[in-house]
Length: 620
Image (cartoon, rainbow, N blue to C red; front, side, top):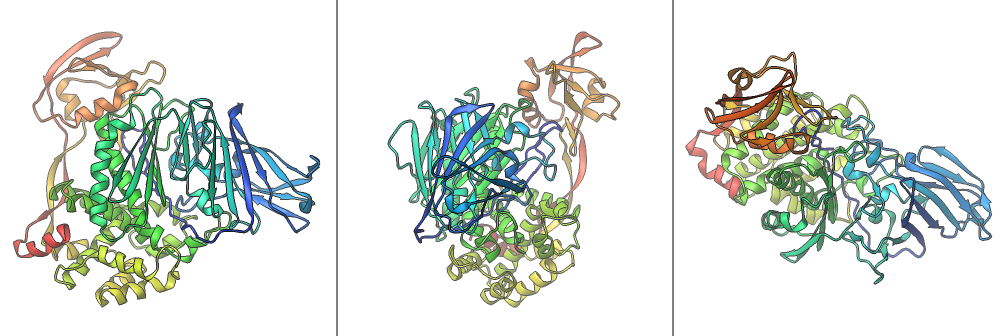
């Protein structure tokens, strides 16, 4: 999962991806009927009824996922299911046994007619511990807030019978008339209080989340693709209409960048904004599906930061249209939700996708050359802090277990840099005519959504479509143990390392905050017993000082993101007025902003003789 610290220690922004299971076109002869009742919520649980297909064995198992594709963590959704019961046609109970956290064995299965159980949600169980800390990442989770919001990631509500994942599913959802379900699926029921959705198999159902909330959505068309943006904002602070212009600009740019790769006719963005209360979502970021993205962010974020985060995470998720939706291995195509086998190629599924999410922005003029260099330099810094000799393919295939799991986040750092280096190699060898997007188009034509590749054959196929140097790179730096010499590849496009003195954040030293919050009073205060930076010492601020207001604007937990965002606009020697409370007494401090500076390794275009290739890299 892509999980990146956004701000202070009490609020981390975490990004994620979910690999895609391609749909199939064959219609199953039998089906599983599902009824979900959102009207009758008891103790924060909803009832699910499963009408069984004909079972021809004496026993059968019913399972909900232990893991879903792309989350790269064992989540055990069965832990949220209670009061599991199985019935025959006369309403008699059949004997059931829970064989593990996610599976129930049903006796006398030939008599089975239906199953019922209660589902609890995951949002209110989150502790905010981050990746690998037992929380289900919010965009992969579920929410049950009676009469207000239901986040239905279907893997949290619906399971599958043994050997019947390829059966069709018909899902009927009864809901309050005041709530509307945003989804990429088509509602086959015209009723205002009941929706019916059909999918060809279980994997297709899992890939189609639904968010019920008071109707707040926009739709628009981009190059033949229908885009739906649905928003749930507890206070109404954010509306779909307020973020649509930026989302539309971004998605037009993405579609233009992708060109011929266009596999999706409808795409839905579901934005859930958390109140940040103890029982609300805390795993912030996004999770992609083939035709949708679920996004969870704090409602208190200033609009500028919210839109920036949406651009970065949604663009990443959208590019999964290329891989793994269109290009993927058999491990993904035939994903086993309870005994998964992982693919070796996270460098492509997540790394190349992350690279595209940055490259398209400079390609389409959304960011500057300097901003792109800064992003890549930051990725190099982060990648160098990870295990740089662990073979990427080995880490990927074993990502569910340590020590490989601890290296997962590197797919968004070194993985993206692998994509960058491959792009540069292909540009150089083709005299700027082709890049990695051309390679992905060829792989898409070779395979496509319904034709998975064998993991151990991909490198040879890529080499056949490109150059021997590409194959050598993959063997040495992706499946091998040799660290990548980034400067060698960047020099091919005239880019070299440079040391730069850059201003830091006055409220953070790396990921360590100088300030924190009193959860009871919501007051922001300077953490005691810390060595403070120049901003604090210049103004005479001390540990324990409560920050009441800055430049006459009051701040507290409710708008701390606005304070942090505003601070990023401060310049050296700007006038500043801070009202503090020290030892119970308020006082006003007038002074100048002194920013903390640090030496960082950056990137800069220095070789003008490589300008033509560099321009082809960015703009071709």
